Image 1: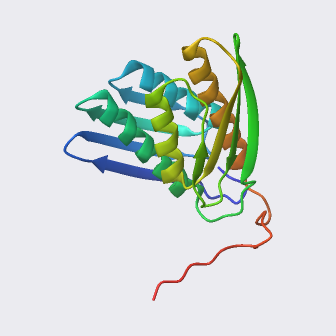
Image 2: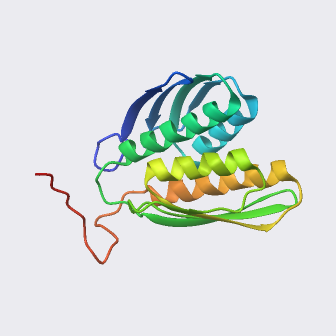
Length: 188
C-alpha cells in the first residue's frame, strides 16, 4: 500500500496470432513474483526485473517463437508498469550501478513520457527486450557496461540495474520533479 492508501496496479493482456501474454503488476505490494513463461532465460530476466524494481508480478506468456515471445512480454510489461505508475508525482529519475561477478553495469531511467533508449548489451534479443519495454513504458533508458566479459553476467547485471533504478524512480514524491510542473493533455 502506498503512502496515500492507493495501491498502484495494472492488469494488461496482449494477444496476437503469435503470442498470449497476461500481466498483473502491483507497485506498492510485498514484492512477490509468479512467472509462467516457457523460455527459461526470459523467465529469469523478468523475475530479476520485477524483484529488483520491488513490484508484485504475476505473468503468463506463451508464444510461437522466442523472438515474438520476448518482444511481446517486453511490450506488455512496459504497458503494465506505465499504467500502474499512474499520474501521481514520482521521483522520476534514478540510476543504479550493479556488479555481477566480473560485470559492472549502470542503468539510468527517466520516467518522463519521452521514450529514448541508448543501450550497451551484448545480446541482440535482450537489447530488443529493453528497447521494447522502454518504448511502451515511455521512458528514457540508458545502460552502460562499465566492465564485463561474460555475456550472461552483463545481461543479468543490466536487468538488476534497470530494476533497481525503476524501483527508485517509481517512488512517490509530494510534487512533480520538473521545470514544466505537470503536463496536461486534452483531446478535442
